[in-house]
Image 1: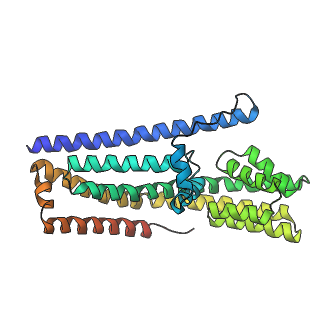
Image 2: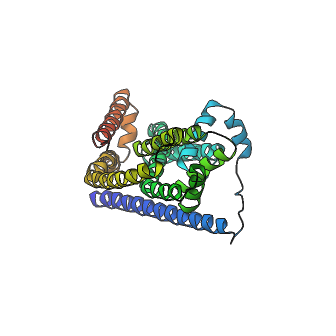
Image 3: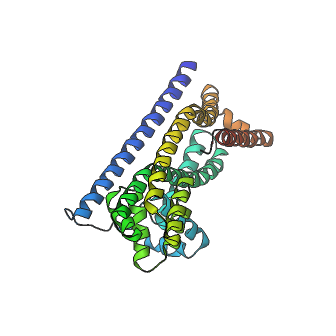
Length: 312
């Protein structure tokens, strides 16, 4: 019985690891393909075709609500090619799947709990995608500052330099700057267009760059020298952020490993004593113990993540 339980847990963990690796490989391949299609479409080698949108009726109704507008703003910051309706339907489907899996594998009591965790996880996923995209944009800021400095030194206007940088840089910087260039083309001021960019991708480095551009544009100062100095500063901050992230990688893994150990302990207990979780959660004291344990695991995860967050 013990060997069977250990074998079951081992196979389950192996399937989870292979599933995560498969999803990462698929996401990486899709990102590379989309980047290649984007580059070829700009050069005119392939035609640009709009993707067919699913759940258009749900999307139209959802956009009228406050929840739909919040989802739309978060999706715009993540860069995901999804409409609010598509994301809402996929989130509900994932929540229902988690409910059924938890009810069948653990106990009926864990179905609603897994559904609530799934809904919370969708918001965490959007925040993670936004953070990852912001970090990628921050890593491109030194090159962006260098392009703007060279363009302004060559005598180009700042609006023209932003459009040229949007064509030369890859996503996400190219996409975000193209959005700024489109807003400038319809007559919006430089301050408003860049301010919206900082709200969509908040970071200290971007705020410094935007402030430099705005003040130089207002006062008519020497943009080239300011951007040259800023480029060196951004390069140094980029290396510092990379070193801090490497030093804190073990703490980050610990934050995710603690809840996984708790889930593994429940699976092990249920495998050694089949039906133990079902019998435990039928009593009020057992349900209270499970809820308190989940709260403590959540608090531990949040505390570890807070301690590992260092502003550079």
